[in-house]
Image (cartoon, rainbow, N blue to C red; front, side):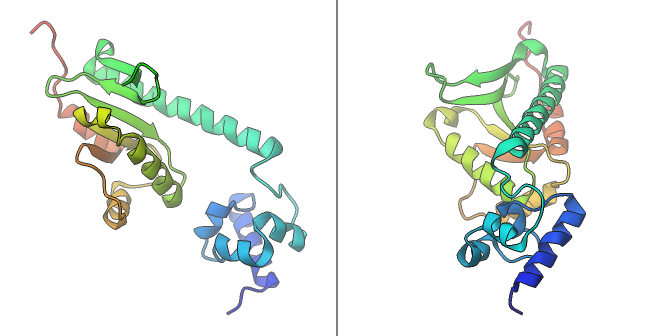
Length: 209
């Protein structure tokens, strides 16, 4: 069945009913009642132009103006909150003196990790992120894999810690299984529950011993 303007409008309005807003291009790709964002780009010049053509109300471009500022503020607040949660957990397990927050691997500060942990059975680094959905998960992970491909990272394991509780470890395994570019040997992806199991299995550093 062809994607007529009527069907497209119905799909966009259905998304609005569920989420209280119209979708971004990434959200279009994961919504079963709409075609791909690429199809919309080819036929209508993009999602913004399509919404204008359909006469839909609400922000037409989520990358500009007040909506963009509000979204950036909410993302920053969430990032601060989840990093604090991870930090508090780590110091409970390993001790505050053995957790280095925002650790730089080079003097020019171009290669950094959120947390560097000193442990008895081997140090490791932790990079915390929050993926909105499967699409953003892949984008974040691919970016981090490139960053942590630096040869300076080879000496320590790195854990990419995904903090969205709606993305399960089973889904993470499925994504990793289907990825063409595989994780390197020292790279791992965990959700918070699995990360806690990993940390409780490690021995805190005891400088007195």
